[in-house]
Length: 200
Ligand SMILES: C[S@@+](CC[C@H](N)C(=O)[O-])C[C@H]1O[C@@H](n2cnc3c(N)ncnc32)[C@H](O)[C@@H]1O
Figure (tube, rainbow, N blue to C red):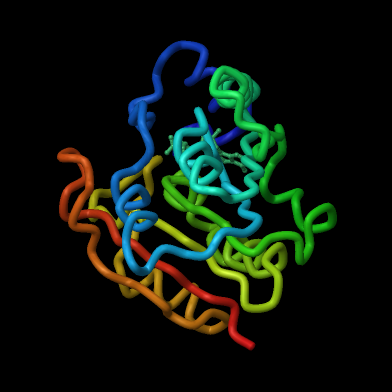
């Protein structure tokens, strides 16, 4: 398996080997925020925020945002964008997401997921779901684009749509789970847009 350490991710950013970085927010999130199903504003954690495009989108839509990534170069680039756009309702923090539970338990109305679930070791997926549950407030929501491609290897590690439901449905209610219709060309047919809510 590829090296999934923070050093390896940092190296990928430093050498420009970051093909996941769209250079703009993911279209399914853009369109969700413009739709009648747009979530109400609140405090949102962005896991594996990378260069911060999605985090900045939600900040500009009125959310209070904290982006987390363990690659310093990603955090620096995201902070530079926020500064340049004079957005003050956003913070980018260098953290390993698996260390967030003590610091941020019950801390967020939302978690935003986009190409982080597919970037971690698949063995850690159950722990990842538990982490999301812990840092969300009661009835908090995960807003996600899952990269459900069927190829072997990774990152990005693939997942089947039913497996996603199997991970989340024991603790979350399904609010929305549908194939994304507005993915970038390279990911068309492989993305699911989801909103899962912490069950009462
Ligand atoms: C495939 S990239 C996606 C970045 C961003 N979401 C995007 O779509 O551009 C995965 C990101 O997750 C970060 N990451 C992976 N494992 C992490 C962990 N355990 N804690 C914090 N960040 C992590 C990597 O540094 C990288 O920025």
